[in-house]
Amino acid sequence: MDERAALALLDGELEAAGDDAAVVDGLVVTTDMLHERTDFPNGTTRYTAGWRAVGASVSDVAAMGAKPTAAVAAYAAPEFDRDELLAFVRGASDVCELVGTEYVGGDLDGHDEFTVSTTVIGRTDDPVRRRGAQPGDVVCVTGTLGRSAAALEFFDRAIDDDDAFLERANDLFRFPPRIAAGRALAPHATAMMDSSDGLARSLHQLAEASDCGFAIEADRLPIDNAVYDVTDDEDEALELATTFGEDFELVATLPEAALSAVRAATDVPLSVIGSVREADDGLTMDGEPLADRGYTHG
Image (cartoon, rainbow, N blue to C red; front, top):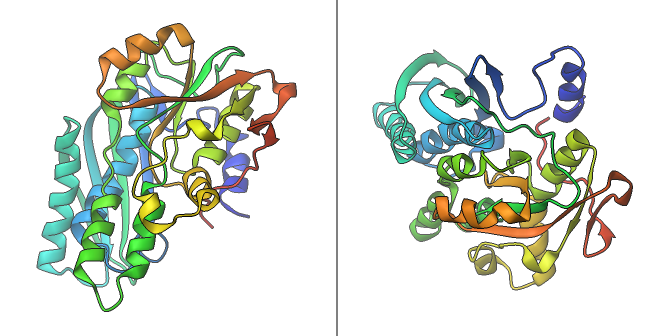
């Protein structure tokens, strides 16, 4: 059973399951677990690991249109190296500072593989769910797509610990969680989630939750410039932008009339990439079926 099958199983058992975070009386709670083998390529600094691990949970809060209030992490490793531990905490603290919240500590444990479990809490009186997209809405994404895919390529190219490639890779891996954009979208979005599993898979998840279809236009996707530093093939660039995942951008649907208000409320680029259709129309890109492919744990 892979991660998606396990989540589907739990969805039938837990009434609150199915969104990026749980919401209880206005309190938003989310938790994530990352492992060195699957989530931190060779060359990932502990500073980047702290930023990315906590940022992933902050992104879930952003996807609910909520404001984060605090973050904690459980840090497990074969040994506690002073410099690595301090670098991790500083990365976690800096990503929290970037979005106006605080890293307040956590737990330490021994483990045979560097592993991090993070929890972020936030607040909102009106959470944005994955269900609610309506035919006629536009489909939007924040920022750019493919950033993490490009980072992984730079990690792979860093033969003999090439400092220039590793620096570029770590820089790209430290994504900015879209809290401000999520707050700007919240009053208008009909459905929203983050793109941690990739754009294509996120769209399939939104379509399933909202019982709708999507018509996406490939030439409207905001592909990150870094993608073109690792490939000059347009088809490969499109593939990296739509299926790799781990970009942690927001994917949202909203009435077209609300676009100007959202764009005025945040300086994060918001790209319209398509429209919401009836469920019978399916999920297409340039008129062809868009496969449900993306990042899956397990």
